[in-house]
Image: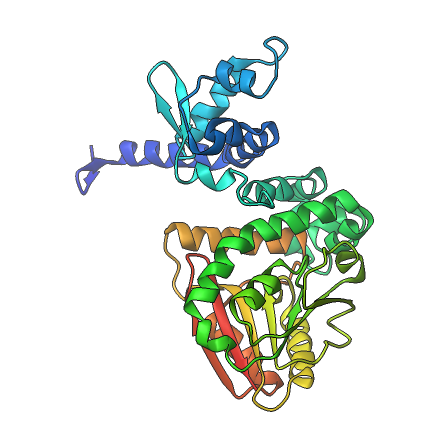
Length: 358
């Protein structure tokens, strides 16, 4: 039998078929994550930091779900699958604790933030309906799959569904909390000299609050987002919530901060957003944009996979031609609207901080 590098052709074909079977069944992973977060399994195991290994039946008991009708066997099956993805750790007698990855799903702090809300937000019924239509983004990108599935844009849909808008805010706050710490630690000099800071797409205003608490020189914060978003934002000292449309105009400030905004729009739309930022800034002012930045060369690292998966999520849910970009692509967007200086700071496993200076 012909061989290549010590492996038979049939062995390679078998491995390829196995790999494709794993890819075809990959939906089991995010939906299982969604299930354990919905059931509050991570919080039940964590129990204030104890992280004591528990059986599926013990987890259900701690959650106040009587057996029956709750089924510990089915929960155990879900947990075992997620053990294979290093979310849970399996101990003797089929007991389970949280790995470091699993601990990101645990509610923490006064606001109970975690990546759990991010998991739930991504797998709501309206979003899931869009995925079988992903191929239409190739056939005709004039309309994203979410619109085809739901009859309106994701942002419009959120605006009409208070519970979805609330979950979106919680999801973004949960993802932002650890990242903003990296920004505050790694970009501290960048906030010097800023008195009035505008956060475009600031949602609840939580990121802006964190920046102002760490940098007292930022005396005035403006949380700028859609009217229906800021209408539900909590009050924070020194922060004014302003509703509006960033494609029309942006409030003036010494600097403009934005996180995961440019990613969801087309090149022309990004140029319009950045142009409105340019108009709102004084000479020497700057845009500080936190965005996922794609590598020039693709590899199989967790970071690259997470970035590329996020790119397809944007294509499916928000804009068929919205996208994540490379550092050079972001540089060209800034130069096209008049920004003369551009720098990139790699501060986090996922996000990059981009600085466009006028």
